[in-house]
Every structure is written in structure tokens, then in C-alpha cells.
Image (cartoon, rainbow, N blue to C red; front, side):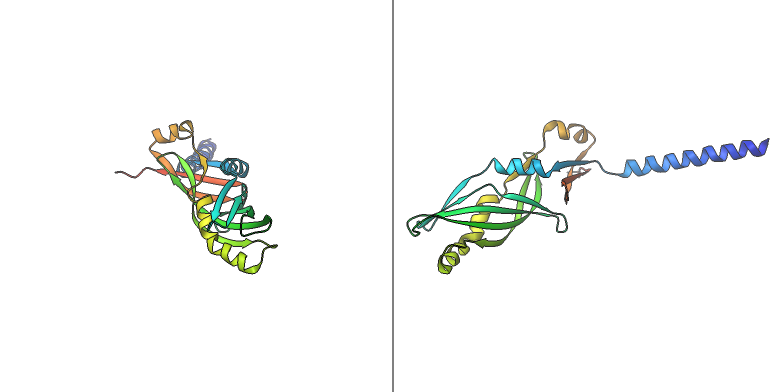
Length: 190
């Protein structure tokens, strides 16, 4: 009889210990907020099209980029369709610009912003090489003006309310195959 009691108590104790371990692990896991690739694409599209004059000779029209998720480097890619036209060209020419960038959280307006831009390829297949070389010299400035600190998502007060009350704030931003995951971490004491 005692043996059955201790065996049942041991099983119950083991189950309670497992439940406590799961609860401890859950308590240690930080909450996260997700942003889908579609939400990012919609937000960035609102800022385009844009027009940039280049040396008073050419105007470059920049269309909304197609965003790609690059989880292996924890960055996003952007491929822009461009159109160059102006006094230096006989007709308009289509081209592309590829850029990669990281993300950062801006607490003042609860936004996720592009930063650490890397310009990839700027290509205008129908332009003469010397014109493409001139435009390439403006490529980084064009990318910087188009994407620097662009807001890709803004968290709403209700997204942060409960976690703010628990003393938490957005932390690391991770690019995943489906979008972004924003971890929440404990606020640092001032």
C-alpha cells in the first residue's frame, strides 16, 4: 500500500516537475511581434514613385521596390525599376537598381527603419557604357535618398501597451523566411 502511494506521489511529483520546467522555459522565452513580408511591401510602396534629377541632365524615376527577405544575412533586399530620361538622352531608358539593408527600431515613433544600405547593381541595358558609369556614380546617393531611414512598419500603441507595462521594449529584429520577428527585451534602467 505504501509502495503504491509513493509510486503515485512520485509520478505526480514528476508530472509537477515537468510542468514547472515547461512553465520556467515559457517564462524565460521572450515575447515576439511578427511583421509579414506583405505588410513590409505595402508600407514601402506608399513612398513611391520618386523622381531624382542627376546633374541637371537626366531625371531618374524610381518605382516601388520589390522586397526580398534575406534571412541568411538578417537583411532585406530591394530591387527597384528605374526610368532615365532628360536632355542628355534621346529617349527614356529602363533600368534596375539592387540594394540590401538592415533594419533598426526607432523608439520615438515606434517604427522599423531601413539603415546600413549596400548598393548592389545599377543596370541600364540600353544606355551607352559612359552614361551608365555616370549614373553608377550617383547610385549610392540614389539608393540613400530612396531608402535611407524609410519606415517599413510602425508598431501601434496597442501593440506595445501590455509589454510596455511589463517593462519590456522591442529588441533584436530578425529576418525570417516569412517576414520579421521582433523580440521584446527588458527595458534598461536609465
